[in-house]
Image 1 (cartoon, rainbow, N blue to C red):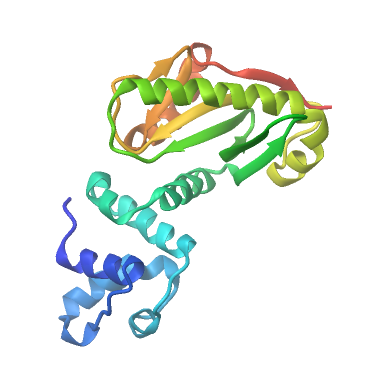
Image 2 (cartoon, rainbow, N blue to C red; image 1 turned 180 degrees about the horizontal axis):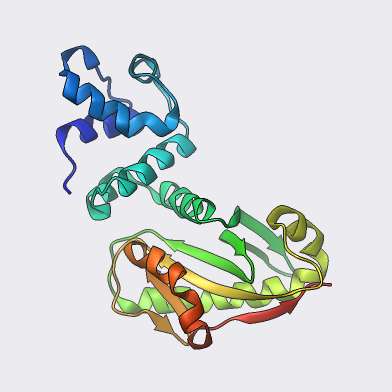
Length: 227
């Protein structure tokens, strides 16, 4: 589904701060507008009067538009990298995962940041969100290796940061979990596994999560026993 004029008007008001006047819309158009902004909890009059929306609100509308069947590639022009991270966070949250966005930690020499940490027993995903159109395989392979290195550093630092992670992600104590380095890209890529590290395009993410148990042995994961 291409982005129609109604959806375009909503998105431009949300993101580009272009004024929107619903008085010129038909009853059908107003109904469609309300359907798009429904997750925000605003009336059309309230939505029209707001001049600034935070990034969470923008991402929530984008997520809702994807659920309504809009082509994700046509939404690309309206997003930035932060919207994409928030969109990934929303998807995992609404799929029953507990999520931390932009998790930072450090070892003796280096500071690290993981875009999204997402947990639902027994999997803890350490996610790198790649928001660009480049379909070349090399950047994705490099990203996969870099994410693997971050996960190894995360595990090494776990004795220091475990209390915070257990609390924020509701990790189960005295249980074995599997930490999976994961790269999620906005566009489609020819490479789906590199050195057993999954590289998943956005439009295949739901299927990847649904079928995870079937190919768990094929992907790289690190066992971690929580004491």
